[in-house]
Structures are given as structure tokens and as C-alpha cells.
Length: 558
Image (cartoon, rainbow, N blue to C red; front, side):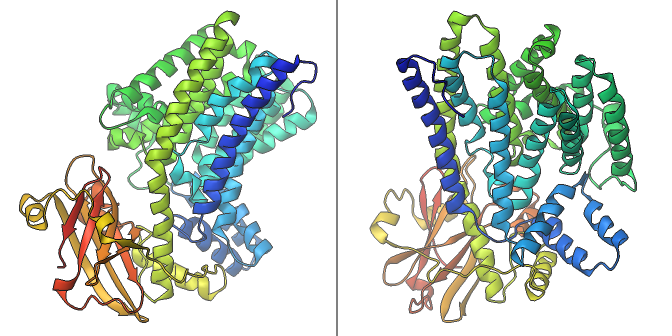
């Protein structure tokens, strides 16, 4: 990106300011990524990465290796993720999950760069300012689950880079652009299931441009790829087919899910109507652009918008039966961010020139507020996200079952096998896993006593075990706040010498499966206290649990 030198000095100065703001947002994102990324597998990483590398190395002929690459994963073919994982293994001698995380997040920079190259319809003195709301939306932290999860970042961020590359090539003439489009489309198909919906978008772009030769030859490759995609395909359990869903659809709920999915950046349980309102408005705007044949004017922007809208329709068909909450997970919110960013650009392009600066100004104010909220709300979750991986690493290195997977036993066995075979090498643990804090600071603002808590059942909690592990006192348990909207933020262990020790966050999928309620999932903690700390007498120690609303409660040992 470079500033046009033929602009007046004043305009160049303000463009530098605008570009600096965008760069600072990206730099802060990269800094947070560097601080909180951790080289340890989580959830589907065991199946999508470690198991694949092990199968590849143990396969004896070419046909077996091809089967490993194209084997179905849920409803997806994840060729791209497997290729990157294998490349990383051969490059480094073992899989480094932080490498995969970085590759996945670079996809966002690719998407942004291609977008910037394609918004030449803005005046030079506005181009950098109109970029600010886009950067604030894309590099906020609502998609934190993808950001720090290797398999998810490669899939859910990587797909958008392949889509941008495919459409960027499709709107340009030349055989190399055509080849790049076909390759990018096939890679999108091999990244995640939504890559299927890029095919009609690319063909439509060529059709709009009346490039029938590209359509014919491109269709041959893509039809063959789709046939290969569905060869040996089986419908995953608990995932009804789209045909079945359409035949039995509740169209009102489906439309609500569709709108909520695209407006999920604005979701908050206290004001649940805002997300579907924003998403629904965006859908109506997209339909208006279609009616106005905006695809003839700005094909690149419209095509990516169309992909996002079409993807949201299919996600709604697959997921709406599980409840509206399925529209709001962190791993889906990048779709909403990109949809809102592109919709904003089309609005700026559409309005009269005197209004553009006002629209851009309002966009900057609105997205800056959304960005600030995302930092405040999601940074604690990002910290927890790293802690649960560190906790699993500690458990593994001390011969205890890990907790960071819904398949506890399988994941534990896979991890042991992967380390034994050299596929993955866990990072060294820090000398201390707990921070010390003064009791006065921890108990500041204490609202109720332990007896009142237990009597009124404001919280549920339990301690699974307390044991001496390699001269360290370790305890594992969980705390669930029962007030609506309040989740566990931190647990402190207060010893007999009145010193408080922090604990590590843990996922509790076992409790989720036991109680069939998602509120039990983010309730776990693992305390690893320094040697010399004694918790032998129940009367000499207790827990202090901190809720997301700031409430602190005392919990005696069980």
C-alpha cells in the first residue's frame, strides 16, 4: 500500500494518519496473537492434524496416502489443513501448532490486501479512511476461537483467502488469472464444506463478463472436483441433509437464524433482537444491490458478498434446528465481520459524494466502539484459552488425563502416541504456574459469605481431587455461577498463610456431557501451587471464585 504522491501535502498527511490507524490495529492483533498462541493441540486438532500425520507416515503406498489426504472430516474435505500440517511436520521435524495458527491468520491479511487492491473506485483522499472500519471489523477479537485454534484458523480463515483469490482472478482476463481462479476454487473446496458454494459464484462472475470459454473449461474441472468430493461421502450423524431440512423446514426460524448469523457481531444476550435486525437489514441491502445489478458495476465486492450470504443460508439449513444460539459461536463470527465490512463499502460507494465522508465517519465511530467492546469482553477469554492449553500440557507431563477435548480418553491416548512417535513435542512448562496476590486485593468487594452462597445456591462447585504431584500441591475442580449471564472468570486458592494463588482455566466437557448444558463447559480450574505451600487441613484453606460480573465468593473445601 502506498500513498499517491500527486496529492496535495495536506491530503497526503491525512492519508498517512488513516493508514497508520489501520496498521496499529493490525499490529495490536499480531501482538496479541504472539502473546497468547500456545503450541498444544485442542479439540479437533487431535483428529485433523496429529492423527492425519500419523496415518500418512504409516501408510505404505500412494493410494493409502491419497485416502488420508481426502478422507472425510465431519461434512468436510480438509485437504488444505492436512497439506499444511504435513508440510510443517517435514519442515520442522514435528508439528508446531503455533505455525498452523500463524498460517491461518495470514489468510486475513491476504483477504484485506486483495480487497484494498479492488476498491479503486474511492477517491484517493478517502481510500485509506474507508479502510479503517474494515480493518476494525476484521481484526477485532470476536473470532478469538478461530484466531488461537490451529485447525479452525486454517479452515475458517483460510476459506476466505481462497474465496478472495478465486474471485480476484475471476474478474480479470488472461489464462493465468483463469488458472489461479480454478486452483483457488479447488483449494477452497478442499478447505471446508462452504467451498462448494464458491463454484456457482465463480461461474456467475464469468457469465456476467460473457467469458464462455472460461465457463466451459472451468466447469469441467469443477464438476470433476465435486464428483470427487462426494465420492464415498456419508452423511455425518446428527447432521440432517439439506434436502431433509428443506422438506421439514420451519421457515420463520430458518430466516431468523440466517439473519442472526450474518449480524452476530452485534449479539448480546441482554438485547438479542439487535443481531437479527442488523443481519436482516444487511440481507435486504444485498437484495437491493442485486435488483440494481450492482454485480455489473462492482463485481468483486458483490461476488464475495454473495458467497457470504449463500454460505449463511446453508449454515442456517444445517444448524437452525439446534436453536438460535448456534448462530453466535465465536468460530462463525468472521463471516459476520466480513459481511458487515463489505456491506459498509457498498453503502459508501452507493451514496452521493457529499455524503461519503459522513458515512465513513459514522462507520469509523461505530466500528471503533464495537472493536473496543471486543477487546474488553474477549481478552479474558483469550487468556483462558491459553491457560487451558497450558493446563493440559501440565497434566500430560505429569501423567494425568488431559481435559481439552470432548473425547477425553481418545485424545489422551493420541497425545501420548504422538509424543512417543515424535510427531509432536510439548513445550517446556514455566517454573511457576500460579501467581501470588494479597488476600486483601482478592477479597475486595466480597458481597456475601460462604454460608449465604451455599444456602441460596448462587453457585455450584466441586473439587475433583487434591494431591501432591512432584512436590507440588495440585487440585482440580469446577465452579458454576447460577445467575443468568454470569460466568466464571477466575478461581484463587487461599492457603493457611493468607496468600492467594491463581489457577489455570479448564474446559469441562465431561460436565457438559453429564448435564447436557453448555453453561457447565467453561467452569473448570486447575491449581498448581509452589512447593512448600500446605493445604493439609481443611480449615486452613479455601477458594475465592470471581464471576464475570465482578462478584467474589468464598468456597470452603469439599
